[in-house]
Structure formats: C-alpha cells, structure tokens
Length: 79
Length: 149
Image 1: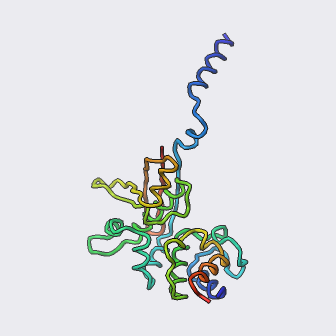
Image 2: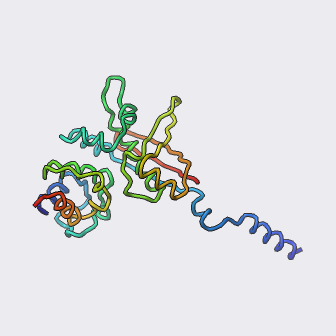
Image 3: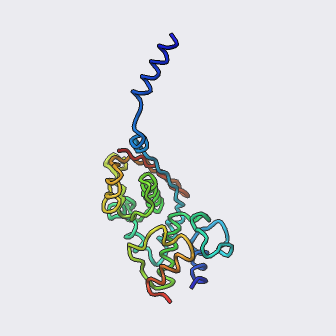
C-alpha cells in the first residue's frame, strides 16, 4: 500500500524533494507539500484506491505523512 | 521637570494599556499563495466534479466562471488562497473549505461568509469581522485575510 501512496505523492504532491528520500513518518507539509497539493493528493488517492474520504477525514493531519495516509486508508477498508 | 515627564509617561502608558488577551486578539492576519497549475490539474482530473463540489460553493463556482461558461482556474486559485488565509488568521487549519465562502459584491469587493465549523470556531475565538484581498496572475494566486474581534 505504501508504495502506491508514494507513487501518488510523486505524481500529485508537488514536493520539492524526491518522495523516495522521505521516511514513512516524515511530515509532508514540512517537506514542502502545499495545502492545495494535499487536495490533489487526496483526489488521486481516491482514484487509486477506489475510496471516498468522508468529510470527517479531510483534515490536515490525515495527509501529513505516508503513515497517516495509510492509517486513513485502512480505516476506509483498504487492505 | 524630569519627574513631570516621568509621570506623564506613566499616565500615557496606563491609558494605552490593553489587556493581554484583547491585544493578542485585536486582529489576526493570514496569507496564502496557490499555484494556478495545481488547480488546473484538479480540474483536468477524473475527480474534477468532486473537487469543485468539495472545495467551492455554488456561488464561488459561478463567480469563477467566465461569460462563455468556462471555469477560470486562476479565480478558483484565488478563492482557495483566501480560504487558507482565513484559516491561518483564525488559527485553525482543519476547517472544511466549504465552510469558508468567498463572496463578491456588485462593486467587485470580496468578502467572507462563514458557516458550520468555521463560523463556530470564529465565534468561539470572538472574531467577527473579516477583510480579504485577492489577486491572481497566470501562474500564481494569493490572498490576505485580516480578522478582527
């Protein structure tokens, strides 16, 4: 799952650094991801994993690291 | 003479003194910049409808549409920047984008309307008045928000 998340971040996160250089718990906002890029990432994750994030999960914290994104996806039933 | 000056200064300091909490909340400022290309990418995606409905109100979408019916990404980017600027001024980063709405008066001046969680948060913080300014160029849009009690 985390490899797929990394692919989405690489394509849509607009990060100024390589996603490969980031640890799973690295803060993506500190790494340069903007608020709007987090929206682009969220939309791409919904397509990639065929899920829809409910409003309650659309928080800054839910997308702040690869680990937190994975946790959110697991909550939505992604294996 | 020196004593008189000291006394006058002390009286002036006292007259100007504002309780710490009020001074801290007298006004708050937020600023944000958005890449127009990031908005264009969302509009190009298969989730473009979801993006528009998740982030922007019906009125905001109408205000960002040109006379030919095309949505202008730069106008949306300016509105997204304004929402983020308001969030920063409010000191809250996790408010739903739709709960902060950017309106445009007949004379073109923008204003803000809060609903739901954003309105509740602002009321809790005692912040009632909002002033925003938007700008956009082909590549970037930006907004400043000033929030006062």
